[in-house]
Image 1 (tube, rainbow, N blue to C red):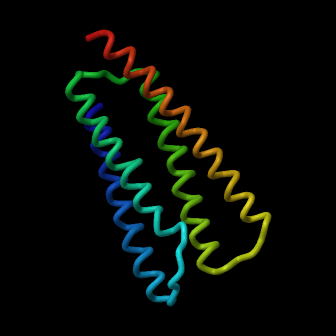
Image 2 (cartoon, rainbow, N blue to C red; image 1 turned 180 degrees about the vertical axis):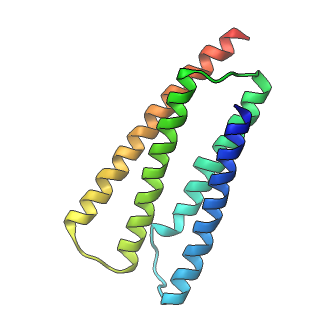
Length: 138
């Protein structure tokens, strides 16, 4: 399981660094100077993806935690939800860069982001119950 967490953290690290470089260069090339949600997509990816899974990797190694249904439920829910959140940050960033003024698009982005945040909340609950059950075994 530590390998799975380590590989996942590496994927989020790579993607987060890519997003940061993309934001910096893309806005420079098109001459955009304002603030946008695209600028925080890389920090969300690095903190919520890379760092969280790196910490979980260390935690799983320290407590010799094994993979089970509860862990899979956390892992799948969290990754799906985090991808929704990052995707909406990227979408909102392009929406802001190009100055699109469409209430329906804005509402759709907000709705999907809300679903992603709710999913992350459930995933943290799944993680807590999973860790609690495994720590009590120690």
